[in-house]
Image (cartoon, rainbow, N blue to C red; front, side, top):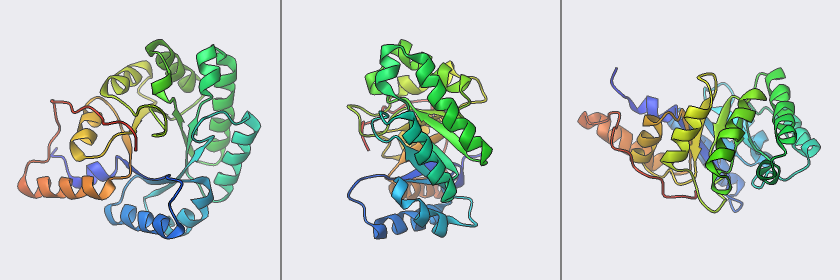
Length: 243
C-alpha cells in the first residue's frame, strides 16, 4: 500500500511541552493536531483540561508527561500526578523513569514505579510510554530499561524528553526495537524536525515520533504525496537532537 499523509500524521505526537508556551499556544497546538488528525497532543500536566476540552470526540488523544523532565520525583508523586491527569481526561502518559536509579542498577525500584503507573493507567483505559532518557544510559542500560518497561506492563518505550544532553538517534531506536517484543511499541523524540527524519524513524521500527515541527512535517508529506514521491525510505537520516 502507498504511504499517505494520514499515515504520517498518525505517527505524530504533537509536542507542546516548552515552559514558555501560553494557553493560546496550547489551543493553537490542539487546532493543528486536529487539522492533520495527529496521534496525540503531548502537553504539560497543567494543560490537560484544555486538551480534554478541545480534543473531545476526535481521534487525537490527550497526552501528558509524568515526572518530567528528570524522572526524579518520588514514586508517590508520580502516581498522584498520573491519577490527576487521568481524572482530568488524559489518555496517554509519557513517564520519565528514574534515571539515577536506573544507572545505579536499582532495577526493582525502576520496575515497581513503572508497574504502578502502568497498572493505574490501564485500569482507566489509558496507555503508558516510558521515557528512558537514552543520552545518559549505556547501551546495556538501554536494553535493560526496555526489558524492565515491558515486564512492568508499559505500552511504549520512548527515547528522550528533549531536555537531556542529546535527543534520540537511529541507533537507539534500532536497539530499543530489538529489546522489546512486538507487544511494545517504540517512540522517538528529541531532534525529529522534518519528514525525512520521521521516515527514518519509521524505517527502523518507531511507531510514534514526538515533534513540535508538526506543520512543517505535514506540509512536506502533503507536497510529496501530491507529487507521487511520498514513500518509505531505506537511506536513513540521523536526528539533530533536542526539541
